[in-house]
Image (cartoon, rainbow, N blue to C red; front, side):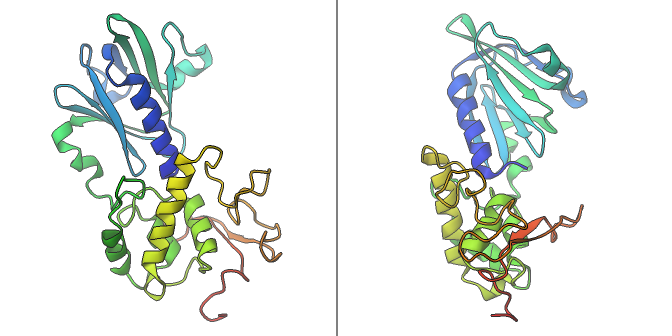
Length: 272
């Protein structure tokens, strides 16, 4: 599933290419909105909220999308069309005009979540989320409060829970636990939660704002060396040489996502 920094990059692309344009035609290829027609509405902009995307139109309508595992937004230059092989994957097609001339076309491919709702009711879609790690001014105090409310919960599962802190995915949680020297199953109530949240904010902000730093946690962009533990099962730890361990995800169990860790750099409480 895309991480918060991935989604913010998509939001920035949609916002830069579509904001200020007017929909010449809209085509929603999902049953619940098959008859929806937004033609003639101006695009006010797109924002990210955690891993959710909100595209707002004049007149008080919002398009809520979520990429989950396979969804993708692509924006085509005026006059360009999708390759025919991708046409069956289209779930949304938004054709625009800019100052009366043909504008970009935005296509949502394989999009698992497509929802039109009143802009005033965006909270129905994203109101359950905790503070956004990539907000201009993240509410760190509130994130810490939510994480601390379940002190016995494993820290990796707690950080992945979007109700506590929105925007962290498996990559960033595993890397954060390594950098803080935390066993991923260590109870949240036993660690310095503020330092963990502060690091999460810095890491994702660095990823989206620094050229060449996207999802590189080690500072080394060479193949196989951009992450400390994520995706490195069976390989030596880049810090101490210990073999990186992994446990597989248990489908449907939020407490057991795929987890990588270094047993030496991230000792359990009993081993510490």
